[in-house]
Amino acid sequence: MNRIATLSRSEFTLLGRNRLLLFNAIVLPLIFPVGMLYLSRDGGLSDKSVSAGLEVFALFLLVFVVFYNLLSVYATRRDELVLKRLRTGECSDAEILAGPAVPSWVLTGLLTVVIGIAVMVLGGSAPVNPVLVLVAVIGGAALFTALALITSAVTRNAEAAQITCMPILILATAGMSSIRNVVPDNVARILDFTPLAAVVDLLNLGWLGRTTGELADLGDAPGAAAGFVDTFGSAGQPLLVMLAWIVGSVLIANVHFRWEPRS
Image 1 (cartoon, rainbow, N blue to C red):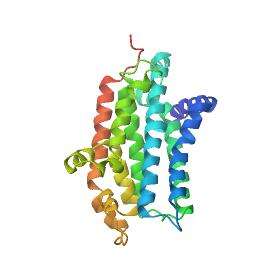
Image 2 (spheres, rainbow, N blue to C red):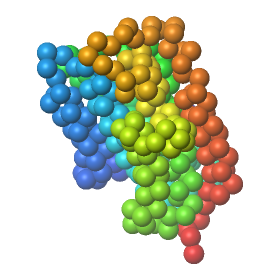
Image 3 (cartoon, helix red, strand yellow):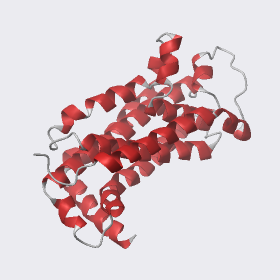
């Protein structure tokens, strides 16, 4: 743990010196969802408004704060031979890879607290099941970290990350409920198994006590939301989808991750 803390401190220092990266990591994940929530409030926030705000927050948080940031960091550190030199020391491979990820993970937790407070201040309800919300955020951060490790294997340098990130960005966007609700049912069922779809489904269940499908069908007089215990019963599929993506991504990264610069 001391070695990971040492590595992460250096990454925090580098992040603090990069004003643009710091802006993208802190402001972007908040300004759009908070703006949406603020504009949609009318004596309170509806479940659909809260769901839309949380969904946009999850997209910016996991794709830009976690995935793209770590993709750039891993590609840069590899190109500068930092990763190769660290492997000659006492640090294990897991510690070397976890160190650069800690700042993104810490920001993920802090920004989630901020958006949660913003939802309740603007008139939204408190989470029905905080456990599922926590699982969605932690699992999502782990999942998109693993995807960054995989993508870094085909990323020559930090500049190339702007191109190689596109498949994951498209895959993540396809999992948003706003997309799944308008495509044909057979396509929507496939998109339910995408990474961000699992995160969004867990967030909706944990915060609102409703599945994504129930939120899409909400009318003017919606029925009662599920309680704390009942939400666990509907969380099986998104939990399994998230776990499958995490395990599969880690296994692929373990085989294909590159420690030396690409020739």
